[in-house]
Image (tube, rainbow, N blue to C red; front, side, top):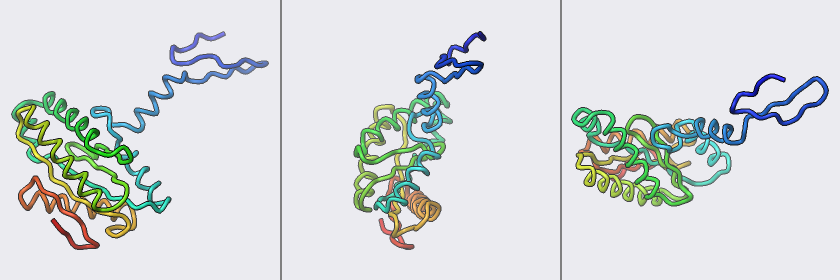
Length: 194
């Protein structure tokens, strides 16, 4: 009988064949790694896309809030990437605490995050304001200068597909940053509102 790797266990032996399956703990860890951002523990981009695709397929109304930490490059430059990573972890934790249990937050990349908010656009606006307050609290506690800008787009009004919806939210995010940061812009079926 061959030696078993520490992450496997023998499940059954019949005739000439032996079936080995990963242990439950290892399977759960692999699933977590496939779905979560390793630094923050938030959903990763792939899981975000799957969630949005599922909501579209189910025909449920929702909004996507894309947010970006204003001035975060200066935090990394001044304090180093280890401090920057700790700030990102604290921001992620604060964001998790600021959303409703039926919503989801994901690390979209770098210092950008995406929140899927079920229900109306107004729910997205409310969550965005709570996220901004949470990030300001982390910023004060950590004594770093960063704030939050965001863009909101609602399905299906602002985009019928995943790509269209994310593009609409992204346009609004960068409009908010261009207009002075620490702001919120909403897509309104091709237009915008603040």
